[in-house]
Length: 257
Image (tube, rainbow, N blue to C red):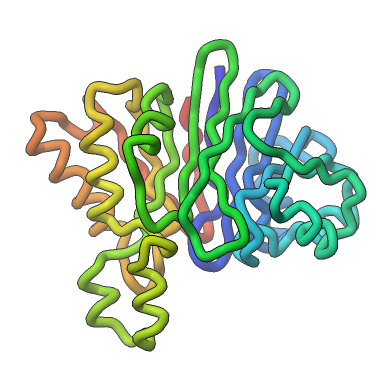
């Protein structure tokens, strides 16, 4: 058994709890340290219960609380090899493991997926335990057949649905920032996320967390309806054939196995 609990997701910070019966992992530490502690407490967890922290990439909304965490706790941190030194210099952690490819945390097997993002290196991850898989892919501006292959074995996925293209184009952001968001090194739009989901119909995927939503260029309702409409066109009913959850920046209380 393996389950996923998104704690925080969005431009202000990201942190997701991945659990098996015996192992607790935090994917990213990008929100406030005290807020993360409070969120963990709701699930009966303290820092000493966390077996490992896995970092996707070096942007502040993914490592912002790492310095404070490592100042107070001795938790092993798993970091893509390309940014291991960078992350080490921005934390108090002497227990950084530079990872590449596949590795293991407790009884959870972890595999990497390279994301196209304007960072030194950015990865999505797939987590496996006893033949069960979940995955998280955010912070990527494009996708390919490899993306579908990576996600297809999973019952539950966390997938970026960052923005609505028209909202970005019509919004107040300066032109260079709009171009960054919409580029292949930016973020997945609602439309791109839905296209990925359409190609996963017939796979193992039954639970979908739409994540990393922009507060300026998206709404929960729009991200949700875009995905639901696609499934409806394929004769699939949300809440029966597929379950969709939209992750909030500040507070989430949904755990899915």
